[in-house]
Image 1 (spheres, rainbow, N blue to C red):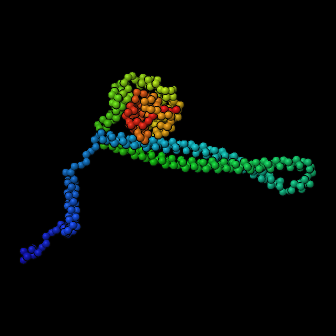
Image 2 (image 1 turned 180 degrees about the horizontal axis):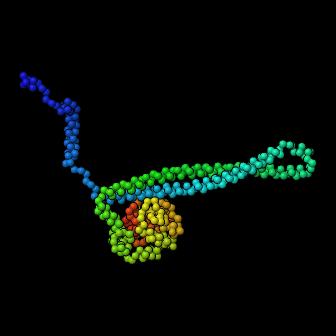
Image 3 (image 1 turned 90 degrees about the vertical axis):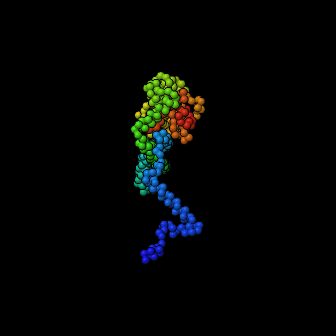
Length: 383
């Protein structure tokens, strides 16, 4: 009896078996089932720890990514600087317009008061017709003299009305300009906030990458970054005996000697003062958005250097490149501005012998570097 019952039992099927069936559709489902089975096996293997995990990036790869983030942050920094310059200009203009509107409003109010006094006087004297006033006057000559004065007062009143209308129009014009400037200021401040967020996000990403490295890896990376300038020229800084990059491998003398040589070859006194200023800024930290005197970003340094020479440069790299005539690379002289990357996002101050002084990026102080260190985009000589 047991055997009979057992012979009628159906064998267990895989849950997908009833879906597979036969024919082309069944074959497709069979292949799907096999694929799912393989995927499940691969997942199980990975969960068991026997699969191969993605390799960790090497310190060199991390450094390359950090350098890229710094360059992206510098693009955003220049956009931030441009928005800040626009906001500062609009804010200054708005203050001037508000002062002008207040001044013109005071004059308008004075004109209004004068018209009010004239209107009141006219009302008081206008109740009796001039002919009746003449008949009733005890002294007709005195009346006639007074009538001439009133006629002149009428002309003065007309001029006062015209002046009031003119002042009213000027006040309205200034107020419209102030409203337009207020809108420009709001737009600039919106851009300012957006670019600030971008800069902070890029720099935070770089910091997070750095935090994944060991202390020794970070030390080696910092040493490599600071010695790149000296390595590119094949020299260590003789002032310090180390390849810290601050002097960019200047082969002889001290910063004072190097500065004197660069100043001597500057094309004019303004450029000479700019070069001298840049040498004095060596070692000061990079801070994005900074214009000195204790810290700089790249365009903040060049702006401050040329300001010491009596030349007012605009704030950003992409506007500084138009601050004077373009200079061919073969004609570079100390004091010229040298620009890098296709977006004109970095600038340095040329000092001769293929080198510049620049503010590189966070963690790297103002230093001397070869202009071949970055993709060269152009040069200009501020006028």
